[in-house]
Image (cartoon, rainbow, N blue to C red; front, side, top):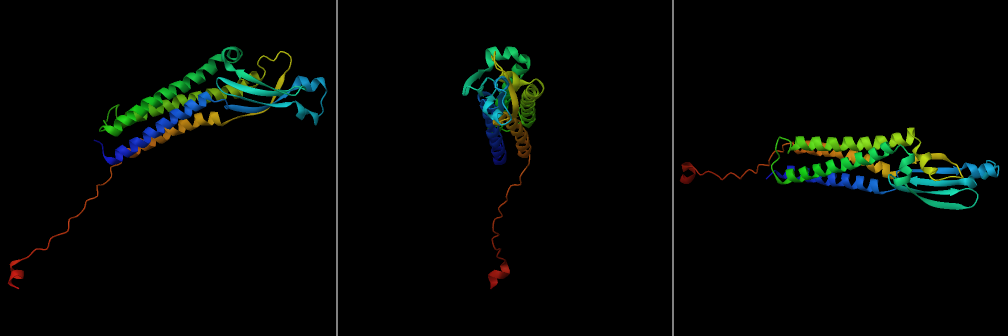
Length: 233
Protein backbone atom coordinates (compact mmCIF):
# COMPACT_ATOMS: atom_id res chain seq x y z
CA UNK A 1 0.00 0.00 0.00
CA UNK A 2 1.24 3.52 -0.74
CA UNK A 3 1.87 5.91 2.10
CA UNK A 4 -0.87 8.10 3.53
CA UNK A 5 0.58 11.17 1.81
CA UNK A 6 0.52 9.48 -1.60
CA UNK A 7 -3.04 8.27 -1.08
CA UNK A 8 -4.14 11.82 -0.21
CA UNK A 9 -2.40 13.47 -3.17
CA UNK A 10 -3.57 10.91 -5.73
CA UNK A 11 -7.10 11.13 -4.35
CA UNK A 12 -7.02 14.91 -4.79
CA UNK A 13 -5.73 14.40 -8.33
CA UNK A 14 -8.63 12.02 -9.00
CA UNK A 15 -11.14 14.63 -7.88
CA UNK A 16 -9.50 17.20 -10.14
CA UNK A 17 -9.70 14.84 -13.11
CA UNK A 18 -13.40 14.32 -12.43
CA UNK A 19 -13.78 18.10 -12.27
CA UNK A 20 -12.08 18.48 -15.65
CA UNK A 21 -14.43 15.95 -17.25
CA UNK A 22 -17.46 17.69 -15.73
CA UNK A 23 -16.29 21.09 -16.98
CA UNK A 24 -15.84 19.82 -20.54
CA UNK A 25 -19.16 17.96 -20.60
CA UNK A 26 -21.01 21.03 -19.32
CA UNK A 27 -19.19 23.23 -21.82
CA UNK A 28 -20.14 20.94 -24.71
CA UNK A 29 -23.78 20.71 -23.68
CA UNK A 30 -24.47 24.38 -22.92
CA UNK A 31 -25.23 27.25 -25.28
CA UNK A 32 -23.27 30.14 -23.80
CA UNK A 33 -19.99 29.97 -25.66
CA UNK A 34 -20.69 33.35 -27.27
CA UNK A 35 -23.27 36.01 -26.48
CA UNK A 36 -23.81 39.29 -28.27
CA UNK A 37 -26.08 42.03 -29.50
CA UNK A 38 -27.50 42.15 -33.02
CA UNK A 39 -29.27 44.85 -34.99
CA UNK A 40 -31.72 44.37 -37.84
CA UNK A 41 -30.04 46.47 -40.52
CA UNK A 42 -32.78 45.91 -43.11
CA UNK A 43 -35.59 47.04 -40.78
CA UNK A 44 -33.66 50.15 -39.75
CA UNK A 45 -33.02 51.09 -43.38
CA UNK A 46 -36.66 50.59 -44.40
CA UNK A 47 -37.93 53.15 -41.89
CA UNK A 48 -34.77 55.29 -42.16
CA UNK A 49 -34.31 55.08 -38.40
CA UNK A 50 -32.35 57.78 -36.63
CA UNK A 51 -29.66 57.17 -34.01
CA UNK A 52 -32.24 57.28 -31.22
CA UNK A 53 -34.61 54.90 -33.00
CA UNK A 54 -31.91 52.29 -33.69
CA UNK A 55 -32.39 50.84 -30.21
CA UNK A 56 -35.77 49.55 -31.34
CA UNK A 57 -34.06 47.24 -33.83
CA UNK A 58 -31.54 45.70 -31.42
CA UNK A 59 -31.78 42.12 -30.22
CA UNK A 60 -29.66 39.41 -28.61
CA UNK A 61 -27.88 36.26 -29.74
CA UNK A 62 -26.22 33.35 -27.97
CA UNK A 63 -24.94 30.00 -29.17
CA UNK A 64 -22.76 27.03 -28.34
CA UNK A 65 -21.23 24.18 -30.29
CA UNK A 66 -24.53 22.49 -31.14
CA UNK A 67 -27.33 25.02 -30.74
CA UNK A 68 -28.26 28.50 -29.61
CA UNK A 69 -30.89 31.17 -29.97
CA UNK A 70 -31.52 34.74 -31.05
CA UNK A 71 -34.04 37.48 -30.41
CA UNK A 72 -34.39 39.88 -33.33
CA UNK A 73 -36.45 43.02 -33.68
CA UNK A 74 -37.10 44.14 -37.24
CA UNK A 75 -39.93 46.55 -36.50
CA UNK A 76 -42.55 43.89 -35.82
CA UNK A 77 -41.68 43.27 -32.18
CA UNK A 78 -39.25 40.82 -30.63
CA UNK A 79 -39.14 37.47 -32.36
CA UNK A 80 -37.13 34.61 -30.85
CA UNK A 81 -35.85 31.61 -32.75
CA UNK A 82 -33.75 28.55 -31.97
CA UNK A 83 -30.46 28.02 -33.79
CA UNK A 84 -29.38 24.47 -34.66
CA UNK A 85 -25.75 24.19 -35.73
CA UNK A 86 -26.25 20.68 -37.11
CA UNK A 87 -27.04 19.75 -39.81
CA UNK A 88 -27.88 22.94 -41.76
CA UNK A 89 -25.70 25.66 -40.27
CA UNK A 90 -22.49 23.65 -40.31
CA UNK A 91 -22.72 23.60 -44.11
CA UNK A 92 -22.50 27.40 -44.28
CA UNK A 93 -19.77 27.64 -41.64
CA UNK A 94 -16.20 26.47 -41.77
CA UNK A 95 -17.51 22.98 -41.05
CA UNK A 96 -14.13 21.30 -40.73
CA UNK A 97 -12.95 23.79 -38.11
CA UNK A 98 -16.17 23.51 -36.11
CA UNK A 99 -16.06 19.71 -36.12
CA UNK A 100 -12.40 19.82 -35.07
CA UNK A 101 -13.35 21.87 -32.00
CA UNK A 102 -15.82 19.19 -30.91
CA UNK A 103 -13.42 16.32 -31.66
CA UNK A 104 -10.55 17.96 -29.77
CA UNK A 105 -12.72 18.45 -26.70
CA UNK A 106 -13.96 14.85 -26.87
CA UNK A 107 -10.37 13.60 -27.06
CA UNK A 108 -9.52 15.80 -24.06
CA UNK A 109 -12.38 14.16 -22.14
CA UNK A 110 -11.03 10.72 -23.09
CA UNK A 111 -7.53 11.42 -21.82
CA UNK A 112 -8.95 13.03 -18.68
CA UNK A 113 -10.74 9.74 -17.99
CA UNK A 114 -7.50 7.84 -18.61
CA UNK A 115 -5.75 10.13 -16.14
CA UNK A 116 -8.56 9.52 -13.64
CA UNK A 117 -8.12 5.75 -13.87
CA UNK A 118 -4.37 6.04 -13.30
CA UNK A 119 -4.89 8.35 -10.31
CA UNK A 120 -7.23 5.82 -8.73
CA UNK A 121 -4.74 3.03 -9.48
CA UNK A 122 -1.84 4.92 -7.87
CA UNK A 123 -3.95 5.77 -4.83
CA UNK A 124 -4.54 2.05 -4.19
CA UNK A 125 -1.29 0.52 -5.40
CA UNK A 126 2.35 1.36 -4.90
CA UNK A 127 3.20 3.76 -7.77
CA UNK A 128 5.52 2.40 -10.40
CA UNK A 129 8.25 4.50 -11.99
CA UNK A 130 7.08 3.50 -15.46
CA UNK A 131 4.08 4.63 -17.49
CA UNK A 132 1.72 3.44 -14.76
CA UNK A 133 3.16 5.80 -12.21
CA UNK A 134 3.63 9.56 -11.99
CA UNK A 135 5.34 9.72 -15.39
CA UNK A 136 2.21 8.33 -17.02
CA UNK A 137 0.04 10.82 -15.15
CA UNK A 138 2.18 13.68 -16.41
CA UNK A 139 1.81 12.35 -19.95
CA UNK A 140 -1.97 11.87 -19.88
CA UNK A 141 -2.65 15.23 -18.29
CA UNK A 142 -0.37 17.07 -20.69
CA UNK A 143 -2.12 15.40 -23.64
CA UNK A 144 -5.57 16.22 -22.22
CA UNK A 145 -4.58 19.85 -21.64
CA UNK A 146 -3.06 20.01 -25.14
CA UNK A 147 -6.21 18.81 -26.91
CA UNK A 148 -8.39 21.01 -24.72
CA UNK A 149 -6.25 24.00 -25.66
CA UNK A 150 -6.51 23.08 -29.35
CA UNK A 151 -10.29 22.96 -29.12
CA UNK A 152 -10.49 26.32 -27.36
CA UNK A 153 -8.06 27.97 -29.79
CA UNK A 154 -9.87 26.59 -32.84
CA UNK A 155 -13.17 27.96 -31.56
CA UNK A 156 -11.55 31.31 -30.84
CA UNK A 157 -10.16 31.36 -34.40
CA UNK A 158 -13.62 30.57 -35.80
CA UNK A 159 -15.16 33.47 -33.87
CA UNK A 160 -12.47 36.08 -34.51
CA UNK A 161 -11.21 35.22 -37.98
CA UNK A 162 -14.09 33.39 -39.69
CA UNK A 163 -17.02 35.64 -38.59
CA UNK A 164 -18.75 32.78 -36.82
CA UNK A 165 -21.23 35.00 -34.96
CA UNK A 166 -22.25 36.81 -38.14
CA UNK A 167 -22.90 33.54 -39.95
CA UNK A 168 -24.87 32.12 -37.04
CA UNK A 169 -26.97 35.27 -36.75
CA UNK A 170 -27.92 35.31 -40.44
CA UNK A 171 -28.84 31.63 -40.59
CA UNK A 172 -31.91 31.22 -42.86
CA UNK A 173 -32.46 34.99 -43.00
CA UNK A 174 -33.73 35.46 -46.54
CA UNK A 175 -35.21 38.94 -46.12
CA UNK A 176 -33.51 40.64 -43.20
CA UNK A 177 -29.78 41.24 -42.69
CA UNK A 178 -28.57 41.20 -39.11
CA UNK A 179 -25.46 43.10 -38.07
CA UNK A 180 -23.35 42.14 -35.05
CA UNK A 181 -22.98 45.12 -32.75
CA UNK A 182 -20.70 43.29 -30.36
CA UNK A 183 -20.07 39.75 -29.22
CA UNK A 184 -18.01 38.18 -26.48
CA UNK A 185 -16.97 34.85 -25.06
CA UNK A 186 -19.26 33.67 -22.29
CA UNK A 187 -19.01 31.22 -19.38
CA UNK A 188 -19.31 28.01 -21.44
CA UNK A 189 -16.09 28.93 -23.25
CA UNK A 190 -14.32 29.68 -19.99
CA UNK A 191 -15.33 26.30 -18.62
CA UNK A 192 -13.24 24.78 -21.39
CA UNK A 193 -10.35 27.02 -20.41
CA UNK A 194 -10.83 26.02 -16.78
CA UNK A 195 -10.47 22.34 -17.65
CA UNK A 196 -7.03 23.08 -19.10
CA UNK A 197 -5.98 24.75 -15.87
CA UNK A 198 -7.31 21.75 -13.94
CA UNK A 199 -4.87 19.41 -15.69
CA UNK A 200 -2.00 21.76 -14.92
CA UNK A 201 -2.99 21.62 -11.25
CA UNK A 202 -3.13 17.82 -11.44
CA UNK A 203 0.49 17.76 -12.63
CA UNK A 204 1.42 19.91 -9.65
CA UNK A 205 -0.41 17.59 -7.24
CA UNK A 206 1.31 14.54 -8.74
CA UNK A 207 4.65 16.29 -8.28
CA UNK A 208 3.76 16.91 -4.63
CA UNK A 209 3.11 13.19 -4.18
CA UNK A 210 6.83 12.57 -4.72
CA UNK A 211 7.75 14.57 -1.64
CA UNK A 212 8.90 12.24 1.07
CA UNK A 213 7.66 13.27 4.46
CA UNK A 214 9.62 12.38 7.52
CA UNK A 215 7.93 9.96 9.83
CA UNK A 216 7.30 11.28 13.28
CA UNK A 217 9.38 9.24 15.69
CA UNK A 218 7.85 8.98 19.13
CA UNK A 219 10.59 8.73 21.69
CA UNK A 220 9.87 6.36 24.52
CA UNK A 221 10.47 7.75 27.99
CA UNK A 222 13.77 6.52 29.38
CA UNK A 223 13.43 4.28 32.38
CA UNK A 224 15.61 5.27 35.30
CA UNK A 225 18.60 3.00 35.78
CA UNK A 226 19.31 1.77 39.28
CA UNK A 227 22.94 1.13 39.99
CA UNK A 228 24.49 -0.86 42.80
CA UNK A 229 25.46 2.36 44.61
CA UNK A 230 21.79 3.39 44.68
CA UNK A 231 20.85 0.08 46.25
CA UNK A 232 23.28 0.69 49.08
CA UNK A 233 21.31 3.74 50.03
